[in-house]
Image 1: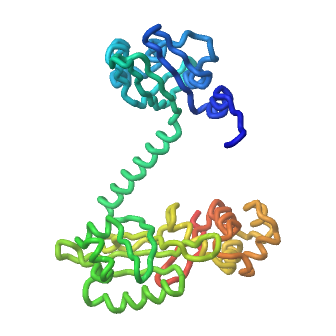
Image 2: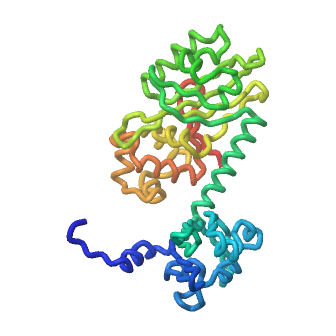
Length: 344
C-alpha cells in the first residue's frame, strides 16, 4: 500500500498474534537457528527460554512421527527438508498437530547454506478432518448395512444430480439419471411418480414418496424418500435434501425422527404456526413458556405462530429446537404432512 511503512517485525507480530503460526531459520555456516516468538509459543515455551535447536524440536515430536523428519546431518549435508505434519508433545503434556513447511537456500556453487520455514498449528483442522472421515465411515456403514443414505443437491429441469448411493443401487450413470431420473423406478411407477414429484417440487413443499427402485441386479426394492427444500435467507430454495431408506425388509415400517443435517434443517423451515401450537399443547406450554425455552421474545413467538416470519428465519429453528429438547418430534409422514408427536 503506497506510503505505508510496515516493518517486518511488526508484520511478524501481526501474523503470529493469534498463536497459530511461527517461523524459523537455520544458517548452516554457523549452525545457528533462530525461532520466532510465535514458534516458541507453539512449542510450549516462553520466547527465548530455551536455545533454538533442531534437537530440541525433534525431542518434542511424538515418537511415532519422528521417522518422517530428516536427520540433522541430512538437512545440513544435502539441503533436504520435506514438508511434514507431526504431533508435538509440549512440556505441559498437551498435544498439538504442527505443519512444518520449509525451503532450502544454496550457495552459487550449489552447496546448501540455510533452510527457513513456517510452522502452522493445524490441530483443530486435523481434528475436524478426523471427524469428517469418521462421519463418512459411519455413512458408508449405514448404506452398506441398511441401504439408508442422505443426499442434498439442486433440482431443476436443467440440473439433476443423483447421490453416489443411488447410482450404486441402480447401476445408472450420472448422465443417464440427468437425462431421465425416472429410470431409477420400475416401469409401472414412473409416470405417476414423475407427475407427483414434479408437482411437489414446483410447490416447494416437503413430501414423502414410497416407490420400488429398479436395482442393478434386475431386482426391485421398496424405498421411502423424505424430500425437503432448504431455503436461503431470502426465502428462495437453494437445494433439496433427502433421507432415503429401504423399507421392504422392515415391517411394520418405522417412522423415526429425522437425524441432524440438511434434511432436518429443511423440514424445520416447513414447520408452521399450527405445528408450533400443537407442540405447545402436547407439552402444556403457553407462548410465554416457549419464548423462555427458546430465548426468543413473546412477540417473535406470536409472529411465528401467526405465519408472519419467513421460512428461513433463525427464530423458527430456535423454537423448534426448544420443543425438540422438551421431547417433541416433527416427522414428515406419507404425502406432505408434518406430524407432531411427543417422543419422550
